[in-house]
Image (cartoon, rainbow, N blue to C red; front, side, top):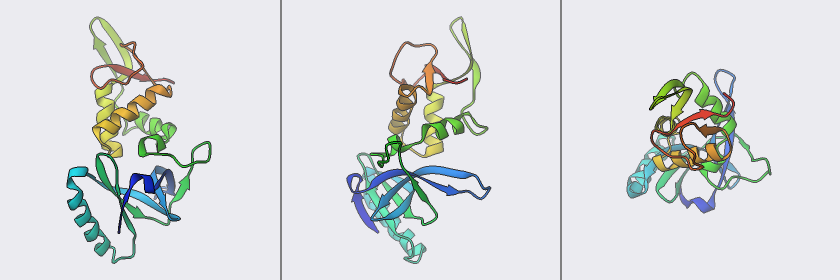
Amino acid sequence: MLLLSARQVQYCQVARQGQTGKVEVMPGIVYQGKIFIRGEIFPIREKKRAIAYSRQQFSYYQEQVYILLVEENDRVTLWYENSELTPLSSNNNQFFSDLISSIDLKQLVFQMRGEQGISMRTKRRGLRTFRQCFSAKEAVHWLQHYLQISHRDAIRLGQRLLKENWIYPLNSNTNAFQNGDVLYRFRFD
């Protein structure tokens, strides 16, 4: 078990073959040639609890699995070594700088539009009706639960979806992703 800062690791996307044969893509890190998958996330104020929990997990795995504790601005995340993972890199062949920028938006949008994704409904705002859309509040909630990220990171990810033209606002003329009642639609719907 090691306690590291976010600057000491390389964030990336990792892939593995799921039980159904589908390839799963998820956030990962590379440290000293080993690949790790994200585990539990603790608020930074619970750092001691995170350390105690990681010791428990290390014992549970009979000291056979390396566990990293990575301290970021507002949280401490446990990362578990997993040799079944394959690291993926960005288009320019460099590892990503942080978790939010490492998320594959094409894969994420596919999940958001899937059966377990965001509910796309017809909504009214004033006298206008908008079909097949979702609110920013719904997107933030879904992102938090699906990716197990903080509220702040969900908003950052929403901003990235907007900036990279995966979604667009229906009832607002803004370039900033706004959590609340602003309605959005996927670009290709």
